[in-house]
Amino acid sequence: DTGVSQDPRHKITKRGQNVTFRCDPISEHNRLYWYRQTLGQGPEFLTYFQNEAQLEKSRLLSDRFSAERPKGSFSTLEIQRTEQGDSAMYLCASSYVDRGGSGANVLTFGAGSRLTVL
Amino acid sequence: QKEVEQDPGPLSVPEGAIVSLNCTYSNSAFQYFMWYRQYSRKGPELLMYTYSSGNKEDGRFTAQVDKSSKYISLFIRDSQPSDSATYLCAMSANTGGFKTIFGAGTRLFVKA
Image 1 (cartoon, rainbow over the protein chains, first blue to last red):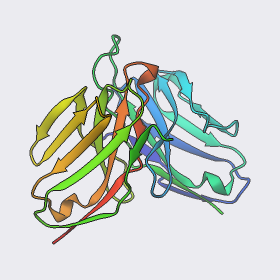
Image 2: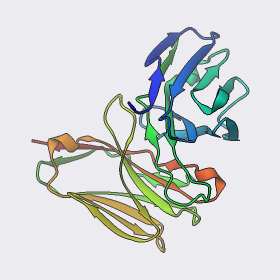
Image 3: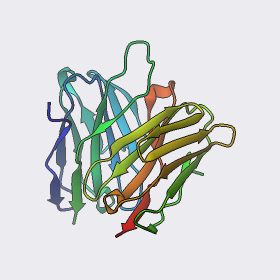
Image 4: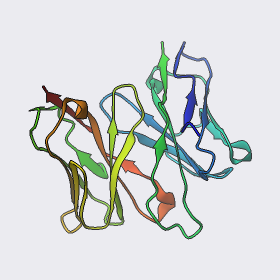
């Protein structure tokens, strides 16, 4: 297992275009998270999945953003009608949480997908 | 007010110095306290985590949690140039979906 993979690593697009990012988590992990990170800031939570179910979405996730995790494997994050304010690093992380919900939820991050909106 | 406050720095120290990084938080429900390290253009990687209050040591790194003061610290002994990175504190609770909340990160430079 090579860890969490994200693709593409860098995307440059024009305002108004749609973009899609893909995340392949660690195969044994049942939770998948998307975060956004801007320069000089820590990662901000966007959404997370438990297997294929999307269980929570942040207020930051406007209706232009949609995330999916079909069959509980890889996930995609789509941004429609991109705006310059969407320029950021989009980080994917995965973790394993047992049924009892005990233990620390240790996140393993991918290298991120950097979005530049012109 | 943010749930987690962290001084962004930058913090510049000479090689061999002891580094102290810290965060404060407001949500008393947080039970797990983590430190991540992030190199430029990379994703964060976990350094260590602590459950509830107390200390934890791992090599040159020591994490401290004081829940009564809502204050956590990371100490780095004998700092090395390879420790130059951004250090992110992070916290989560067992409720609310294990959502992990991050601080803004402190940029550390260790000069040879």
